[in-house]
Length: 125
Image 1 (cartoon, rainbow, N blue to C red):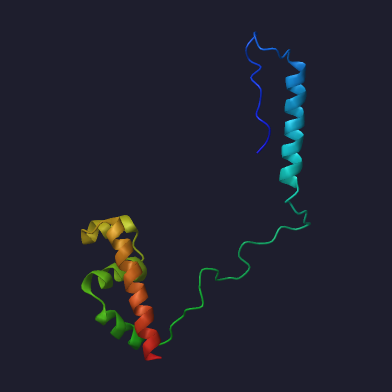
Image 2 (image 1 turned 30 degrees about the vertical axis):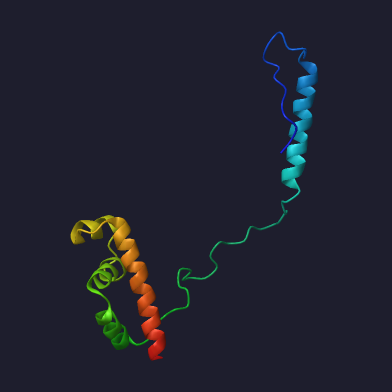
């Protein structure tokens, strides 16, 4: 990081104040130069999302019947978790209250269910 700071807060220290202040100014200048060395100056900041639909990952599935059949193949807990959280767009707290499952169990069930759906639907294509 930098040089260790000297303790100038006690009257018994050999430091009289001016050398410590000069060291602190020098340390601050070093920190400023070090931090600004990695910055770029731009005229216009880039937008975070440039498209109208930023949350789509390109995995739009076009066959609703195949999706319905794949959903039927899921275990009951995973199917209900996906239905509540993805299709009905319930919050985790709402889904936990309705299903009696914990928030962590719902997250795991959705994750495993989505992976299973991806695997099944890719195999059918």
